[in-house]
Structure formats: structure tokens, C-alpha cells
Image 1 (tube, rainbow, N blue to C red):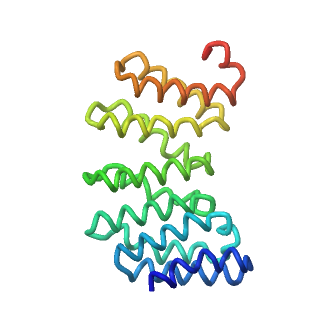
Image 2 (tube, rainbow, N blue to C red; image 1 turned 90 degrees about the horizontal axis):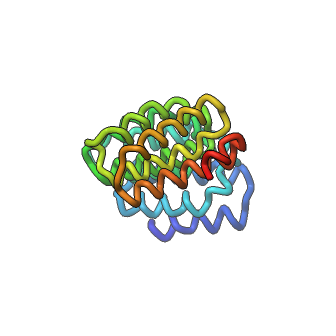
Length: 210
């Protein structure tokens, strides 16, 4: 079965027909829902290798519907794999806010890591998602209870918030506020890189950023 799962990525490359791709992803979603975590990891690898084909999926909601129930699983690894699957599908599930925000509060490190990955990927495709999650991110990067490695990853997500001027102002202010308070070198570097990315899309901030 693992061999069959892995073969899907080659099938999509050799026959990039929308009907085949749609049917293939629906079948993979079925497998994902009803398999063990080893097979789910293999399916996640197929999703990652086949991202360029995902825009050809016609039944996006059906794929999401088949995968989403695992977010309620008692197994944190299953939840983490599901979040990463949504992250790989960011180009087609950019408005699925509910799949990420709740998981950022998880007590399981692997689930939080997967949620950050998904949030980062989805934010890169959706300014609407950026607007919805910005408040949560701003709270978490300021909260001393949030582990420092997590804050370093979260702050980078603000780098996607440049298309809307109000959102860009909020992202920049959040980064500058934290920059004043932190002494951690790696965190400072992450903040500066995020600020530079924001400034590169808003020329009025370039002199100040330099």
C-alpha cells in the first residue's frame, strides 16, 4: 500500500489531467483518513511533491472534508500530520482559518510546530487569513509563556503581511515593539529579517529600516 501511495506523485507528473488529479487526491484523502500514521506520512510526502498540481483539484471541499476529522483525533501525531497536509495545500485552502488557530494553543510541541508551518504557508497565499490570525500571532510573540524557539518562527509569519497597508503597519509595529525588549540574538535576527521583508514591499519604510 505504501508503494501504491508513493506512486501517485509519479502518476500526477506523467498524466497531469485534471480528472486524474482530482480523483487521485480524493483517493489519497480517503487513505489519509483511514490509514495509520506511517501511511499518512507517505501521503504527506506525495502532497508535498505534487503541490504544483493542486490547482487542478475540482472537489477541494471534499478533500478537506475527508482530512479534517483527524484534527479531532486523540493522537497528537495524527493531528500534526493533518496540519502539515493543510500547509501543503495552502494554495487551495487559503481560507480554512479553523484548521490552524486552535492548534497554536496545543500543549503538544509537534502539533504547535505543524500549526506554525500551516499558518506560514497559508499566510503566504491569503491576506484575509493574515488579517484574521494577526491578533493571535501578536499576542503569542509578546507572551513570555510562549517558548522562544516558537516566537522566532511565529515572527517570520508577519513577513507575509505587506499587501494591506493597515496590516503591514500592525506587523511592523509589533516587530519594533518586540525588538525593544528582547536580548536574544537569534530572535533579533528573525525580527530584523521580517522587518526588512516588510520594508521591501513598502518603500516608505526603507530609509528607516536601513
